[in-house]
Length: 140
Image (cartoon, rainbow, N blue to C red):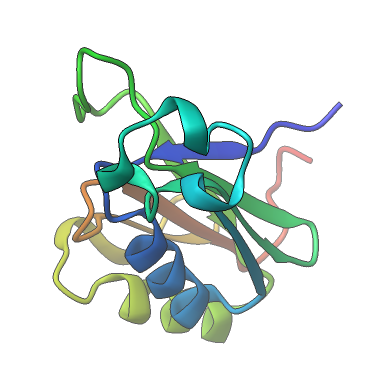
């Protein structure tokens, strides 16, 4: 079993997913409403909305869409994207790139458990947790 992150946007999914690709790398695929079978059932103004987008980089996968229900998009703090980085260099690179236009909750710091950790909310309102284990924990 795997769990993947699925992000909802309000008309700027393509922009956000391209931003994440520039930060994290990977291959991005985007299907718009106009290119899919739902196009005939939705208003013409929605043809460029993203029906489904997928960003893959190794085992990482982030998915997203502009399709939100009638209630609209409500941002909250109930979901975060966690990236376990393989090195300090990778963590700092991802944090620096994702921090463009963001609000930092926690700068990158070493934790008591021997890891580096940082947290931010990106310019699209999504929360990111970045972690890198520096040394083996004595609990393992």
